[in-house]
Image 1: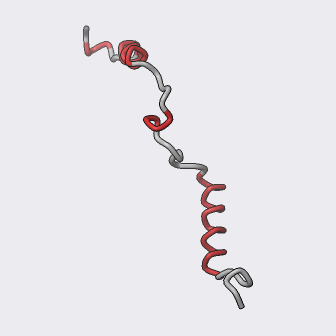
Image 2: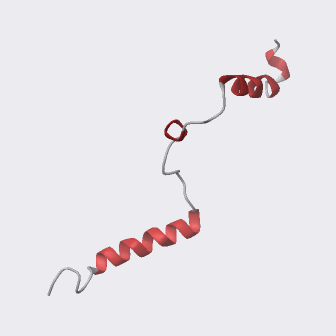
Image 3: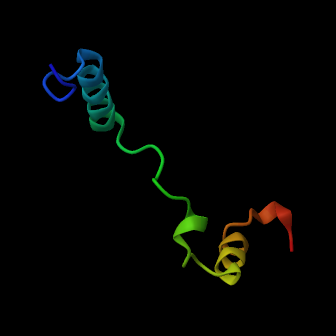
Amino acid sequence: MTKSDSPKPADDDAVARRRRLAEVFGDVLPETTSDERGGGGSGEDREAWYRENRPPHHGG
């Protein structure tokens, strides 16, 4: 009997468990970070977002 003849039940259980968790919770974390993907927004976009969303009591 070779390794490909019969998969381990634990491996099948782990695959099924990951599939079920993905169905219930979706992808919690992306495969890559925004730094790895690159392209992101510029620093100006970030600053504009902070100015637009700054609470009134923070003055400015």
